[in-house]
Amino acid sequence: MKVSMRASRIASCIGIVALMAGCANLDQMGTGGKTAVGAGAGAAVGAGLGALIGDSSKAAMIGAGIGAVAGGIVGYNWAGVKNDVEKSGASSLGVDVTEMPDGTLRVNIPSNVSFDTGKYALKPALLPVLDSVSRALVQHPELRAKSIGYTDSTGSATTNQTLSVNRARAVANYLTQQGVPASNLTAEGRGPSSPVADNGTAEGRAMNRRVELFLYAIQK
Image (tube, rainbow, N blue to C red):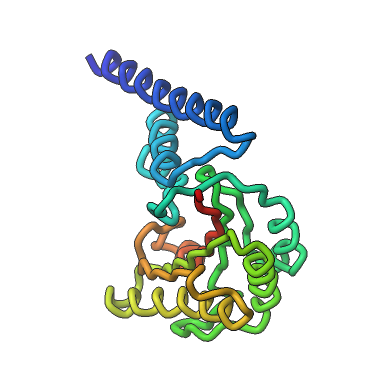
């Protein structure tokens, strides 16, 4: 019975992934190659893949980083923006720039290069990276950005939530100071939720203390 149920589950997941791929192909044919992929669609594909590899809880997070976006996210050619951010010193600082399955560009900023422990004042070393992001947002007004702050699990829930909000806002406020319209930016704190590593180790806690900056284009 268990084998039969697992087989049925896998078949359903394959169907979900195939359906999403088919929809993307149809959209590409109708819009000259620009595929519109909503955050919910990306999460659905992630959930399907998660069931296939046996860890749907983590894989379902793929494509769901910024949550629902009014109008939906459209595919975007991130090559130029990604190259500029990486050239600003991102790699040497440990700032990871990744194109996500939902069509966004994630700039993952670790706390060791962005903030002192328990603080939310930006470190000078990070500013060239944020300058490159702000240039992209100014030069391409069709783009939007969402800053999301996270903490590790130590300390009180209230303290962590406040700190994550302040750190996310610090990043967004700096972009605004560089000329990015405030209306094109949002900030959110999620405290210790969605850890990417084990909070039981110092290394894991350091990875969980981060700001994820998502760049995206919305469907018009």
